[in-house]
Image (cartoon, rainbow, N blue to C red; front, side, top):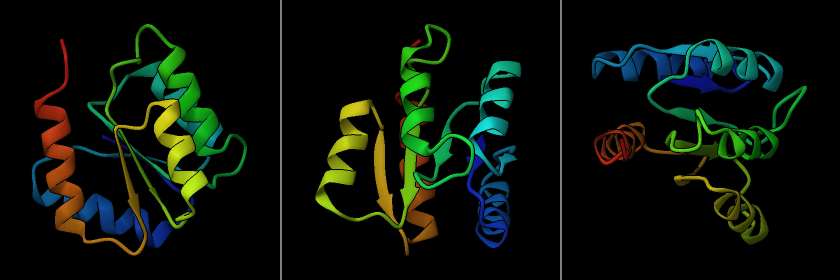
Length: 121
């Protein structure tokens, strides 16, 4: 599981919660670091903030969906951006889910489990 967010408190919370459910996690704090990690070893899913340094979440999502190797990877956008255009843009780029902050951690874990379970291939 790749968590891509530049907020250390949030990434720590997500690592803890996901770990309690048996998920192994890796954290990228910016879009460049995330791209390198995705190239090295694709995770089971990505939790992705839209506002990131280096490459923003939408750019990362676009690159994931354009990659033959990563195109079916479940991606949950987890962001404070709540405007209609932000949600629609991410979904049009191929986000599997769009969750806004603040969020319910158990709901995020449930959505993630469903996406991984229903992943093609």
